[in-house]
Image (cartoon, rainbow, N blue to C red; front, side, top):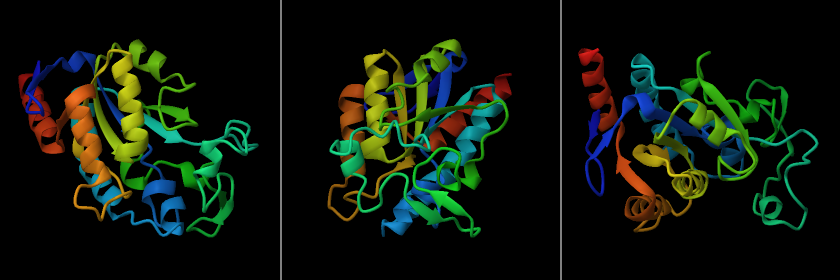
Length: 235
């Protein structure tokens, strides 16, 4: 068992029943030229969180813990965006889902559309062949996706959760995971939230508090990497 220092209390985790979930670490949110940066949103926090996530993925792969990536993306015909008067469409202003943009390499791309540069995983977190990718079209990774089937097929009960943004897609996914009896450990330095970043108590902080109080546990990349390094020594 992995002994993880966590809030609100330490937690024992079975590595054979654990998976790492990477939420929406994709170009639209964390890369120059993506949707967030084009909208004037500061992506530096996401960049920092992605850098902290890399070692966790490497350590997990070293001991055979599977990695599952979530990607926020829509069909090219936008048939899965929802009605024009629905919140999922309206709340993505000022940039709309499906808008054509120019990718950093000069090619034509589209905001949050499957098969484009915008929805590719960040280069620093490029998936490996044995990793799993799950496409989603709402904030929660479980809504109308195969995520639950993938995780149950892997025998996962414990989820090490990383990604962006903390108060939206990460929290939505963690809540739905808790409803399905998964034990989520959110790695605070591997998640980020630009909304409310300038406030005395940020949205990131608020979501972590909600998770540790009601939906799971909070830990860090250092704690997980140290615990997994000990696991390698035992193996």
